Length: 126
Image (cartoon, rainbow, N blue to C red):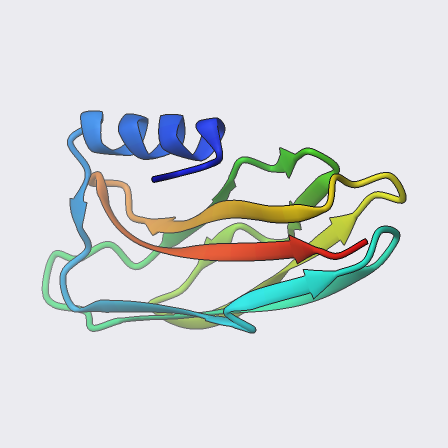
C-alpha cells in the first residue's frame, strides 16, 4: 500500500497517459534510499542507459514526483539526459520536516510516452 497519496496519484497519471516501458533501458539511483535528519541534504546520482536503435529518440527527460513531500524537497539539475548518461538531484529535509518515510517517483521518459522509473525512499529521522 502506498502511503503517499501524491505518489499514488502520480503513478495513476503515469499509467493513464498510455506510458509504456522504455525498451532496452535501465535506470539506477545511487544511493537507492536516503536517511536524513531535519536540516540535512544530500545528492542522489541518476544513471541512465538506453540502447539506441534506428528511429529511437536521442534525448530523454528526468522528472521526480512529487517535488516536495511534508518538508522534504527534491531539486533536479539539467533534466535532459543522453542515451548513456548520468546526472544528480538534491534531496533536502527542512528543519521542521516530518519524521518518517517519504517516497518519490524518479522517471526518465522519451518524447513517445515510453518511460523507465525507480522509487526513491527518503527516511527522515528525528
